[in-house]
Length: 185
Image (cartoon, rainbow, N blue to C red):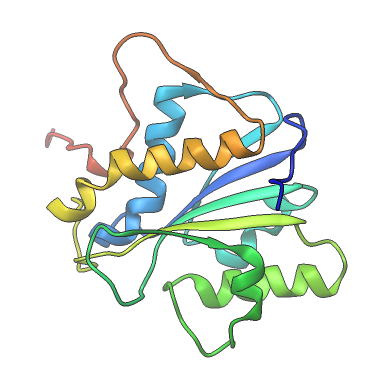
């Protein structure tokens, strides 16, 4: 079967999802912030910090022809393991199957948009299996070690769709705002 070709100028978005105050649950937003700092994307590609907004993301994704959602996945496997799941496979899963703490509201949003005929034609979830989702802002060592592999998977997914962001020259300084320390005045 021949791989479908995609017009690189189709409007799309990369959505980082997760709670950055619950360690590995914030991996989606962490990767998104890294991508924002390391790469320059074409104008048709939006980078969206979805945090824990869930269904409130509808206006941000409405009209997009493709989405790549990056999130922690609560599925069996080894911490730091990366999974790429096609969106249509997600829509076929039963509603009681929970793969992410954000899935219920996001899943509801995707299904509602699909029912209304305004769903995104193509979407995938790039998930990383968490080790620790307790309170804190640091990623566990196994999940942090998977960042380079996850970024490579994002770039491969984009390349398959004809999207080629340009590397930023110089030092890469992601805005991990949740890890900033402020001094007492």
